[in-house]
Length: 614
Image (cartoon, rainbow, N blue to C red; front, side, top):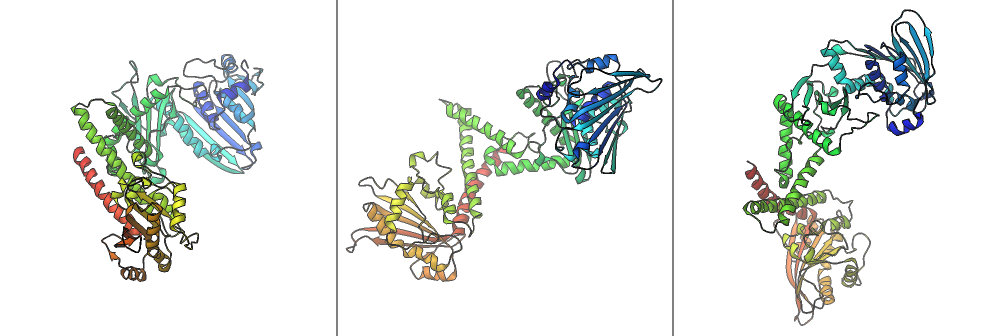
């Protein structure tokens, strides 16, 4: 051979699959005017791959002198749609390919095709007989097949159909009969499958208004029928050189159950737009994306016109997305929904949203249209944040007694993080003190690890702490910098008790309140004017009675909240005091009350977008 075969194999077929053998052999047989094609597979048993024998037979014109000459030269092809490389895929999987070919109805050419092929052959005159070629492949080179399906006649039939739908369909239109016979004998078990052109579906053809380029039109060939759910399948492919090149148009999550759907996009501009190994399109990524958009829109139009059941499902997905992500309403590509994956639909809409935000933020002076747009974007940004809150609430609902205090702590604010008021925009998606009360969003500081450690050491001095139940897990928020001389501040303190512990273990929360309030005030030089204390615990009837007997009163809530406000004196003369507002509440009160507040905001904003869209 006039090209280094080993090098060509590495260069063009490093990522091939076993089924490529069938595709290339069948395509070559059709090029040789074959009307019958046989695939015979024998294997002693699965696992004994060294005994695998693959025999391919056709009734084409055979290897006459011209065809044999071309076989010995890579890239020597008669027309642009052929690549002149396909036969190399045989040597990706087999050491030896023995070929016997009858041509001119009286001559037989015999040769072995391998990596050292030198175009030597033997020619016999055998008298009048039918033309045809037999390829016998032996010496399997792998340890095993990537998929046992590759030697399953049913799978091979499906793969050949999907790859050559256009070839079979064109043969049917011209009343040319093509038969394929597939047979395997594995461990003594015989399995068979057949393909013939009379079984091909009748495709509908939809000419598209948009063109591939200045000269070439685009046609959508499609076939859809209802089937049993177990037989559902969707094929979307470009017809390139009368072969199908699959492209992902409908995401797996959107595949409609109960339908067999075949969509083939054809244009003269696609011809020869594939690499030598027929694995990858040579069309630019930008152009491929444009073609996919055209393809998806054409499929959507067909489904809207002819399949109301599928279209109804897609409309329900549109409604779901608009309700779930109202800040992106109006940015969704309608023809993407129900076809592209939800993550891709959301990303595309989010990108458009960001581009609009960037445009408005970059404008020096807003005209009337831009001003209206800025109001719309502001509402969308707020919805995005409210949706983020809903996600935090969703995560909180999943917590249970197996979670440690730090899991809830990290949802309210990551442990040992420091937040400053000037960074409120950048910290908006980390600092979740709004779960306690929206007014705390204005507080300026969450203590850092070093400072927090110092404070905890001071306010828990002489307390007995075990690692799980009594260890303080405190988040401190300040209305201003407590270290600033002369500045009076409010403090928010949150203490979390692990879910599921007893009333006696919970009762330590309010027992420690006064002492910790005094120590905290002293630590900050008596600059604390109010302390808002939140103790998050589990409730039972005994614990509620204990709280009532200690001056706590129940508040309205979706859970349990008990409140007490009193002065905590810092000296015996009662000259200095801190107002202590103490809330003892259960986990449900935090989650459900936060959800009620947040849902109210969300409903208002959703209603705004629904009215606008209608």
